[in-house]
Structures are given as C-alpha cells and as structure tokens.
Image (cartoon, rainbow, N blue to C red; front, side, top):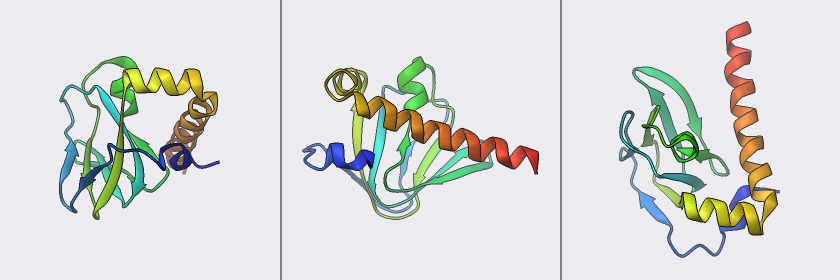
Length: 120
C-alpha cells in the first residue's frame, strides 16, 4: 500500500512551484508533508541528503520530536503536498493504524539508504 492512497481525497493539498523552499533548516516545525506529486530536494547545510518523491514524507522529525528542522526542503519540480500536523497524525495513527506502519517503512528505507552509503 502506498501512503498517498490515504490522502487521495485531501482538501488541504498545498502546491509548491519548482524552486520554492517548503521549509528551512533550523526553523520550528509543527507539520510534516506527504508528497503526492513532484520531487523535493532535501539538504542539511550544504550536504545533499536525498530526493523525496511521490509517496515519501518530509519534515516528520520536527513533528515527532518538536525540535527545529534538521534539513531544508526545496521543490525540485512543481509539487503537491499534504500537510500533516500533530493532531492529524495522531488521528490517522488511531483510526488508520497502517498509516503509522507506512511512515515507519519510509523512515526505515531512508535509514537503510543512508547507512548503506557509509559502508561503501
């Protein structure tokens, strides 16, 4: 199952034009985003982290630990994102437990990619 399926009827989709900063490293964060369409570039300082694609999430760390953003995210192409604040996150976890599993799978895949690069 793709996480985007849970948001196919979302009314609060945010659109970002290519080149637009979605959020900046060091700023407060109270929302994560589910990528419906487009690609986002994720950078920490000057270091490239990854390209987030449809079905990915970005900004989840600040939502989960209530700390400042650890990366800057910029739209590589025109994008459609669904914002998920803490209240919505908790409702989704409660009413649709598969949501939590899908987010954890995305995070696990990201962690595996990052640690695989260190072993090379």
